[in-house]
Structure formats: structure tokens, C-alpha cells
Image (cartoon, rainbow, N blue to C red; front, side, top):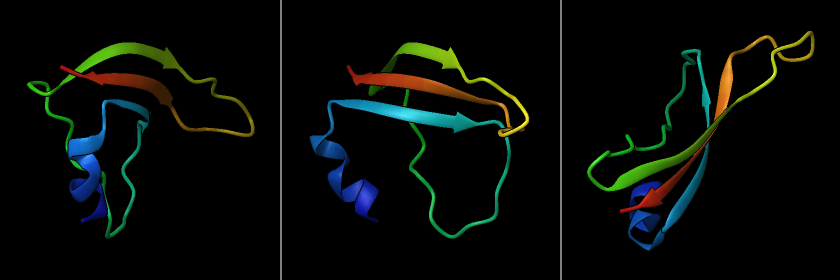
Length: 62
């Protein structure tokens, strides 16, 4: 609920997308391609400390 309440005020998002499904009861809202433009994507480093695939993604409001 807090995410949805504040989204109208957000102009840029820095998101870490993790290539795994997790159980939980709170989720970030789906990023709408009509509202947000992806401006960068950087693959994270997978190693012995971090065995998950992930990417750092930056979005800007259109």
C-alpha cells in the first residue's frame, strides 16, 4: 500500500531484479512500460557469497 501511495511522486527508480521467486506478503507494484522507461541495466556478479542471478535496473518516468 505504501508503494502505491508514493509512486505518483517518484521520477526515477533504482531497482534490483532478482531471478528467483520468494514467498512473501508484500511485493513491489508491477512496473508499467507505459509509465516507465528503462535507462540502464547492469548484471550483478554471481559468486560464492551470492548464488542468485540479479540485475541493477534504473527506470525513469516517461
